[in-house]
Image 1 (cartoon, one colour):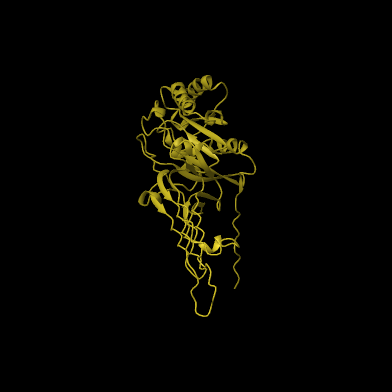
Image 2 (spheres, rainbow, N blue to C red):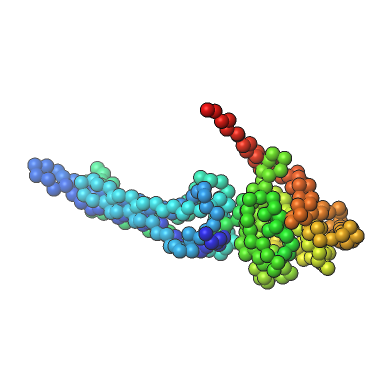
Length: 344
């Protein structure tokens, strides 16, 4: 299944049915009177969060969602049928934006949440509704209210506890593959990761979700490389894991590049708790490791952790440091495997 995190959708609620002008014309009934029914209500357009979805790919193949109109009223006091509603099923973490892509209509973060996007028009009153002591034969009926036309944007922000940051080939996908069952693409060229990946990581009998996004480069906020549009997937994270390639010749510059892109992106992303880790230490000897660590600690302004995702050195310590930054209510207990005892 292809990954899609932004979709433009056109919606329209149904118009209400018009009221009916009708009079009873039955044999042996001397005074018939008005009996026109009301029109039916138009269908509404809803958005609902469902389980089992992690992409907006369905909205690439269908962008128009029009609810049914209400049927007009009829004689013999018959009300028109209401139009059917339409439900847009979206994954957890979907933001619904107005046409300007800035105004947030709803932020759906839990399964089962529903939000009304376009209300259906009310049905018009039939002439029976206007009957009174002074107007016993009304010949008027109301038309139904029109539906609502609207253009909205759906933007998916993945729900994760930890977000991975770093330049291309910093070892983010390798870390995710080494600590979870996720199998992201890993290669020795930049921009191997083209879309976000999620993995469930376990340590000390608890589990949390880690999100790996495509690597950032200098000028990503201006659209260079893949750009910074995937940074939205780590906005909901409790802590950020910044991986720096220990084999790079410009370690301090690599660190400043990512921090500058976070600040240029805006929002509270640059202020989130962040753990900086020097990665790929298996390719360094002791002297090179000390020099690289000292070079990174200077811009960070404090101690940094060291790790090798390939050799699995220091991975557990990094996971425990991440766990300490995540609220207890976000952590999930690791399920214990119950062994079945064999009986004859």
